[in-house]
Image 1 (cartoon, one colour):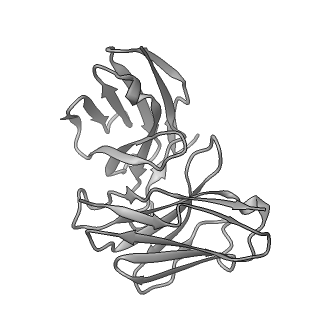
Image 2: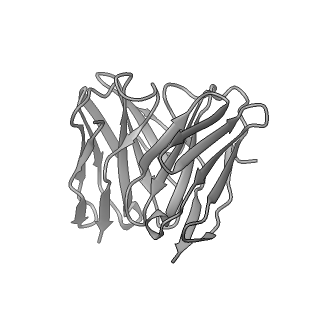
Image 3: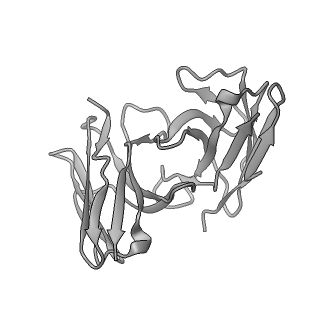
Length: 118
Length: 113
């Protein structure tokens, strides 16, 4: 149980285009989803916290107009990187948590999306 | 001082030995503690969580929590080459909003055959 999927797993795009990444909880309803970014050889950096039906809460320094997050249902959250630039190239990982699974604040991670902006 | 600190390693362990990983945290009111394993190029996967002082065992893994000393550790018994990965300690700090976790920088473990 507690399976989280992400799509796509890998994407290459041109500078200036927008990229949408989907995160789905497959066998549970996720009350909260999180979006992280990880650069090579660095630790996870939380970008934003998303609750179903409400606006995402962004971490300091993360541009909310550049990284659009939508949490339309209890099983789906999307991250859209708008006007992507090469410095946005990174490994984007979502996680989901729910009181239904494990300890109440346990986060289960999706497999990640590797974004390369040319 | 970082909120969650781990030795970056690498921690080199011979196959079959015990790997001992430590993590300290700054928020005394922290409630929940997690260990994740992350293979290179992959996302983190949950190993176990602990929220009460003492030991918690799951297979070859044992988590140990000491809230008074503000540390949590992970022991890996009978280490295997497949255990070679980065181990992330994560803490739900009482000051954090919602279910946000604060991650340490990770300890890289190398198990040598």
